[in-house]
Length: 174
Image 1: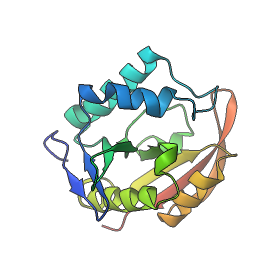
Image 2 (image 1 turned 120 degrees about the vertical axis):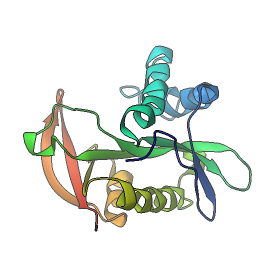
Image 3 (image 1 turned 60 degrees about the vertical axis):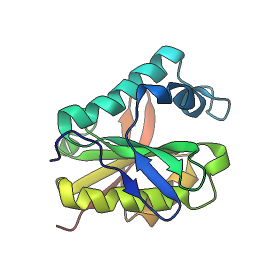
Image 4 (image 1 turned 30 degrees about the vertical axis):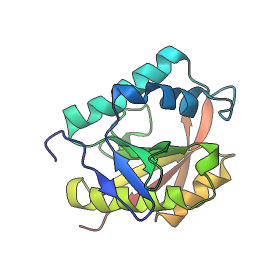
């Protein structure tokens, strides 16, 4: 594990950097904005808690989420990262690391999620246990295609809360 300092990752078009409290407004746009479906839109309080959770993951576990910016403009375009959320999922995922991603609509369709995902997974190969999973909504085909492009394989449908989710898994080569 790392020292708790978020490493800065540079790709040809993006910078993956540490979240800070100054990202609150951008995160509100990302997680509470009009582009988010009504049932997934977060309140101001929930956005703040999620931002703190992203920052805290690095402090406690040595890995976490990155803020994603365009290299050329410095514009915030989303988040991507790794977490240990202790979700109520099937027991065989108890020691797996979870990954996830969210991009603003204006950043979608440019290959940014794939580029950021590959950088994140390259970092993970050097620093994390060998098993990672992600969750997708059964109706989110774009996220499913990204998971598959990043080397995840559909594994199973599971119940989470009051709805069905799709779980994808990926073994990291070590």
